Length: 238
Length: 238
DNA sequence: GTCTATATTCAGATAGAC
DNA sequence: GTCTATCTGAATATAGAC
Image (cartoon, each protein chain N blue to C red):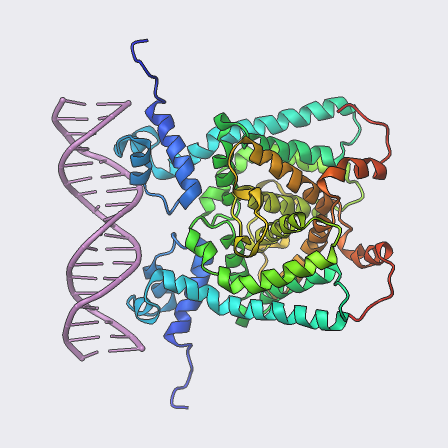
C-alpha cells in the first residue's frame, strides 16, 4: 500500500488508448502523439515499450486475439466431446465461433465493444500487414471450424462452405464495426451504435439467424427451382 | 487530328490513379505525390483541378455513384411498372440492387473491379467524412428499396428488415472488397481475387443465394422452434 | 523507466513564372 | 493549364540527460 491508487502501468495505458484510437480513426489516421497524449504518457514511451507504431498495433490485437482463439477452440472441444463422434449442428458451430466473439463485447476486460469495432474494421483494411500479421493466430481455429462445418454439411461442396464462411465473416464484421451506413435514411434507430454489455446480446439476436439462413441457403444452381417451389405462383414477366 | 494520340486529360488521369491507389492503400495511406506521380501529372494539378485531397476523394466516388444510383432507380422503376401494383419478390429486389452494383465490376468504363473493391472498403472506413459525404447520393435509392422490401415482406417487422438490409450490405461489401481473410488456411482457391469481367458474375452466383437466405431467415424469436421443425431429432445435450 | 530535445522525412497546400 | 520551388506543419523515431 505504498501507493494510494494503482494506475494501470504505462504499457497498458498505451495499449488501451491505441485500441480506442485505432478503432475511431484507423491506423494511418492515428498519430503516436495522439496516442501518448490520450494515455497521459510520454511520446517516447511507445518506442521504448513496443519498438515501433507497427509493433504497437500488433500487440493491441495479440493481447485480445489470444483469448478469443483459445476460447473458440475450447468451445469446439467441449461440443465435440459431447457429440461422441456425431457431426455437430451448423447452428451450434456458429454459436460457438461467433458467440465467443460477441462475448468479448460484454466484458470490458476483454476489450468490450471498443475492440469488437476495431476488429470489425480490420477485415477490409487496406494495409496488408494489418490483415495478414495474424494469420498464424487464426490458422488452427479456422481449420478446426472449417472441418466441423464440412462434417456438419456433407452434401454442400466444400468450396461453397468456404465461401459462406467468408460471407458470414463479412456480415458479422460490418455488424460489429458499429457503422450505420443507412443512418441517413433509416427511420428506426438501430442499436448498432449502442455501447455497453447488452449491445453484444442485441447483436447476437439479430445477426445469428441471418448467418444461419445464409449458410443454409439453397445452392446456386438450385435457387430458381426452390424459389418456385416455395411460391408456386404463375410466372410473371421476367 | 492535330494530335496523334488522345491521352485522357489530366483531370481523369488523376481520378483513375486516385481510385486505384485509394483502393490499394486507403485514403490516409495514399499521398498526393504518389497519386500525381502515378498519373504522370504535376503535383500541383490536384489542387488546381479539385481544390484539396478530400475533394478529390469525393469526386472519385461521385463519378461512379452517380451512375450506380441512377441505374438502381431505373431497375426498380422498371420492375414496379411491370408489377402493376403488386409487391415485388424479394429475390427480384436484391437482384436489382446488388446486380447494378456487380455490373460495375464487369465494365471498365464504370470503374470495374477497382472501384468495386474501393467501395467494399468504405463501409467500415474509420474516417467519418468518407462514409457520410454520400448520404445524399444514397438517400433516395435506399428509401425506395427499403419501401419495396417492406411491401415484399409485410409480415416481417420493419426494424428487422432494416437490420437485414445492413447485414446484406456487410456481406456484399466484404465480398467485393476482394480480401481473403481465410487465405492462409483455405485449401481451395477462391476467385475473390480474380480480376476481369467474369469476376463479378462469379460473385453474383456465390453471394446472391446467401443474401436471400439471410433475408428470409426465421425471425429471432422463432429460430429455435423452426430449427426443431426442420430437424425433428431428439434433443441432445445443450 | 521517463523525460526533453531534436533529427529526419514527408505530408498537403500555394505563390508565381511560363 | 502546367510547372518549379517552397512554405508550414506534422509524422516516426532516437539520442542522451536524469
